[in-house]
Image 1: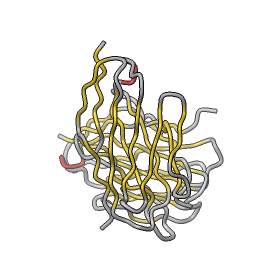
Image 2 (image 1 turned 30 degrees about the vertical axis):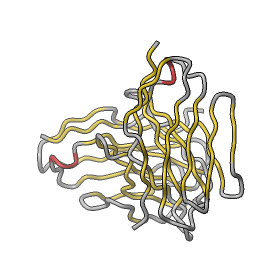
Image 3 (image 1 turned 60 degrees about the vertical axis):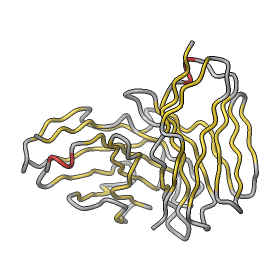
Length: 114
Length: 113
């Protein structure tokens, strides 16, 4: 099992460009998450998907959109990138959104917006 | 809103000493408290977790304690080794039906040989 995978590993964008970060899991998990990690700020939830077909905003959703393509895949889209979106983005998954489920993280995508 | 405070932000210990990291949370409905370890350039990985019906849990050199009345929980690492050097994050589940995790800002632990 690969667990949670993310593409790309690293990306440089210019302000105003768009891109989609891809995430996939092979653990048959129902719930998936997108976090951003900034120095000294911990992990902040952008969006999550409790189950296939549903998505909800987290703590910092502005400037992002998500798609739960199927049970395996959950993508994060930046429509018009801004320097403030320079960060490391982690996707995670868990069996369910019960509040007591281990979240498994992907390797991360390092994004630099110039 | 819900909040998780984590202290200290940095911690330096000698190899073989113990390390303690403390977290407090604000949501009285939180009932799940995981700890993640993140090595430089790597993904966060779960090292131990505790649920609200348990006061303490141990796994070899790692232990977590929970005081629900005071709304705080702590990570204890004994006999520290250089490979314990990493950033450690505590988290608390968000109460109610959502079940998301709220993370602390992290503690950078350095173990000096």
